[in-house]
Image 1 (cartoon, one colour):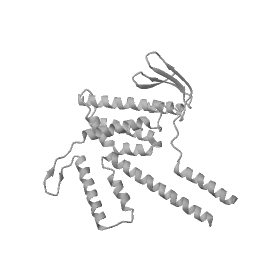
Image 2 (cartoon, rainbow over the protein chains, first blue to last red):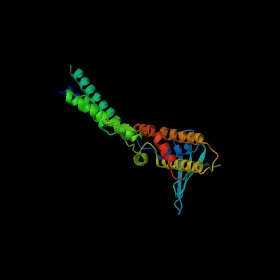
Image 3 (cartoon, each protein chain N blue to C red):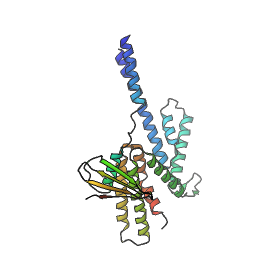
Length: 90
Length: 187
């Protein structure tokens, strides 16, 4: 009886894994910013940034500052029209 | 014995699941190409046991109709059975809708983050500006160089959509359509 119960549980878990595959996990903010930095051709040295600070002004422009795994710190500017630019912070 | 039965059941379930996924992918791919989803349903029907001559004849007619509609949607001139030329349809409106659908799917995809999407949007807008400049002969870049830039941006998008393989595949198949629609942008 116990063996049957164990089989039933195993079957339920297997069915759950088959029918409900693990979906694509959402990208974290650190990964998102690191990808943006690399898209703009800047070296980052990893998949996620740290020390993220975000400021938004009255005009709707957003300024994000973050540190890459290679130690370089970058400023990501997102204009109110949605244009993105990246520049290293000296 | 119980284990054998369990393994067999799991195998059958897994096989069924894979078959569903394959048919779903085929249907989506055909929808992107502009073909009706009827192709997938015909292929699904082929897997059933009923195989009378009438059914086969109907399937052949459906496949012929599908090919005919595909050819007409691709702008080819199709000769019908009576020997008369059917008019070729333009696909500008259809491609436009597909483009909008693809853009909407990229917006809703969880494979890439918001800032990355904004960066890609900036790149796409730059590409549109570059093509406008090329058409107005403001830039000295050749069409091949513009196309190379487009291909680079396209590869970036495909690489970023690695976690969304279905969307990546559909975008990959629409490469020429996207390029043509970019060239059709009014200067």
